[in-house]
Image 1 (spheres, rainbow, N blue to C red):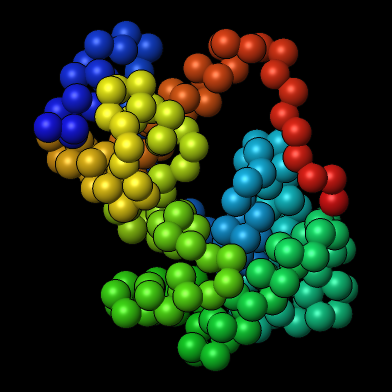
Image 2 (cartoon, rainbow, N blue to C red):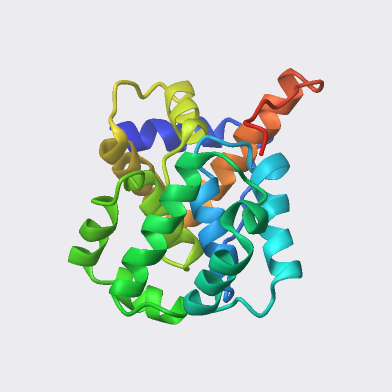
Length: 214
């Protein structure tokens, strides 16, 4: 059983640490949430995404609802607010905001209610540039118990001897492993992410992260 392989692999890792993850939403500021979700794909989180999220929180605390965040982007310009000039993510943010507003979403709690309905999740991944991983990442930030399969999860699963799984099967397998370990899915997800991030650094402490410059 693939989930058992992951459990056995973890049990033999002396440096693997568990990080309990709360079910409370990470953000109540929807502008910060959308900044995080839209920018995170393909970018280094600590060096590129996190500073921009913090900037939105600190510089625009009043833009805590979607209508106010949208007005801010319109008045100051998305590139200025996000400190990001590349067209693709700016367009992705615009599409996600307009979609959300069309669904009556203004607060984090509106979004939680909306995303808790399965067919609404299908609507989200129909948006250009928003796939299953971004949806799961969004749901994790909203406090849902899920796994967002990224390159760290894929590498970890491969190290455990589980290969040739697609996104959904990898997500299910890691979820089953969490059940066997009596952990929440997001706790195992975050624990794997931290282990792999640390392992990557230990292999090359002088690692230079490359990313698109804003």
